[in-house]
Length: 134
Image (cartoon, rainbow, N blue to C red; front, side):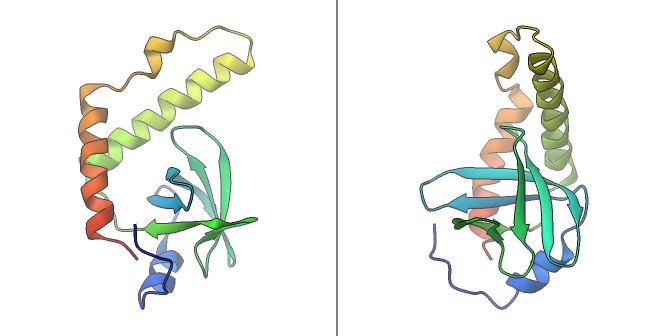
């Protein structure tokens, strides 16, 4: 991962994120955040981490996670529609699993395993991020 230097298109890319878009953020501790935009306002990008279902907020001007200056959006380039759809389906699947957990229903860990399409999407994502760093 490159350092957090400001790239000329960073602000424009952050400003163009809209509800339903998927972006990637990276933490200096190595955490990878694949996020689905749930809302935006003038100053903030609201999103949900697909894999953990955590709600997160990012500064819309700098790309840093609010309250966590070690995590920053590093890729906002649109994914191909098939890859985007796979991540949206994964988000829905994980949302349903988390809802069952909140209801006290035990979830089979086999449900968390990646499908062949999800593996393909993750393989693509690494290359996509590297080619489109902001």
